[in-house]
Image 1 (spheres, rainbow, N blue to C red):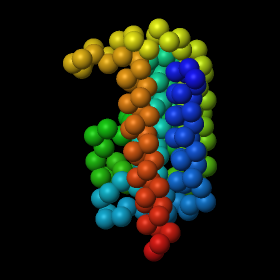
Image 2 (cartoon, one colour):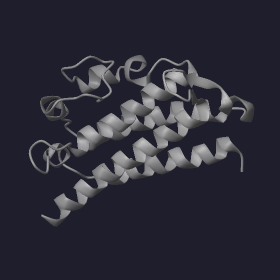
Image 3 (cartoon, rainbow, N blue to C red):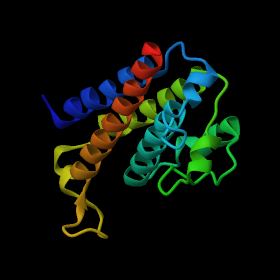
Length: 169
């Protein structure tokens, strides 16, 4: 198995879990916040997809799907199209409301497709390329790709947990 095949599998698992976390939920369920200030399913899925979009576009040299394909306008959130959720206030989380899970899934599908286009072209020797020198040690392409998988799986797990809470109510 090549690194590209391994990464394709990992990002595919995120995609599957995103679909499972939101499928069939109402707008109210997607916006539900377990204690009134916790993250909602909609925010978690939007955020994990924004992180993937932002980080993959940066290392690939692509424009983010969010801006290139009009997703920022489709979502219509009251914050900058460059926002990815880091540092969001409780009010920002509350502003992430969608009329259908399809919007979240369709955006994730578009980001997933761009991610796969990038991954399919990765050569093994490129994985050691430094992509972020702000850290010590500097972050390589391999580390960045794995960190996105880790972050996304944590957030989609949180969304799945919230779905379980909703289903048991």
